[in-house]
Amino acid sequence: MKNLILSFFVLLISCNKEDITKQISVESKIVVEGSIEEGGFAKVLLSRSVPIGVAVDSTTILNYVIRSAKVTVSDRVKEEVLRLKRDNNTIPPFVYFGNEIMGETGKTYSLKIKYLNRTITAKTTIPLSVPILSADYIKDNPTDKKGNILIKFNDPINEKNFYQVQTLLIKKDLIYIPAIYGNLNDANFVDPAISFQILRGKTFSFEDYSDYKPYFEDGDVISVKLRTMNKAGFNFWNDWQNEIINGQSPIFPNTTSLRSNIEGGIGIWEGYGQKTILVNTPYY
Image 1 (tube, helix red, strand yellow):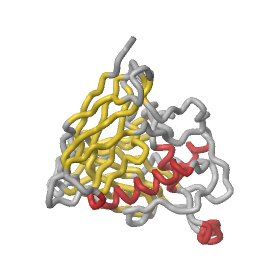
Image 2 (cartoon, helix red, strand yellow; image 1 turned 90 degrees about the vertical axis):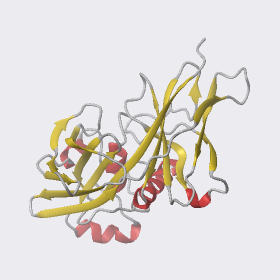
Image 3 (cartoon, helix red, strand yellow; image 1 turned 60 degrees about the horizontal axis):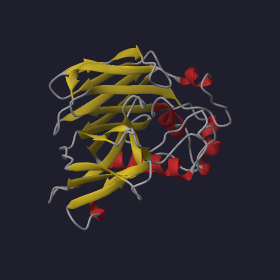
């Protein structure tokens, strides 16, 4: 699996069982997966929802990608029209990219999409980022060749924060992957000093999952990212995580829809604060 976009596409097209009858006769919806991260530029992928009962695979998924929309991002001062580019690290390999408006914490970003006779809008703010104090490779037994990552950070007092922990294996992964149980709500913290063990995450794929491992191994070089996000992002990622953990098949309808903050469509437009740290594991 090259990235998370396929999982967004598959999960967001689904509807709950009560909506199946209605969905068959309703015009397809615009599916949005968009983000702007601290220190980065906007990225948006667009597709049409898939009718109930239609099979989706790595080839037919391209039939639902939208490549002729006008996608605009604004920070209230400047406005930028994103450019569609082919990105072979994504599935599907077409993404609208920005290169002018860079994400900054505390700023609000508006998204506007014009496609045929439809207008889709959304807003998000990039929360303040929180630094990672440390990240260590931990084994259950010293002789093990595998382990997990223990991350530590301080949750700011008197601030409401939602977090997501992601990892990227250098020279192996092409994108950051959310850790299993890596979405955190500080309402559940009993102490501002947070110590959290990371399980390596997985993504949906049309490929075989047999080689998936929920742990890291000796020789891995791991970039760990701590992202802050808004409640809308936390709700979306919690729904996404539930689908991953429950092992739902990506080519069949799910029992619930992912919560969305998109007006006129479905999906997510989210701003993220972010800090990273590099972890080197023993190499023998």
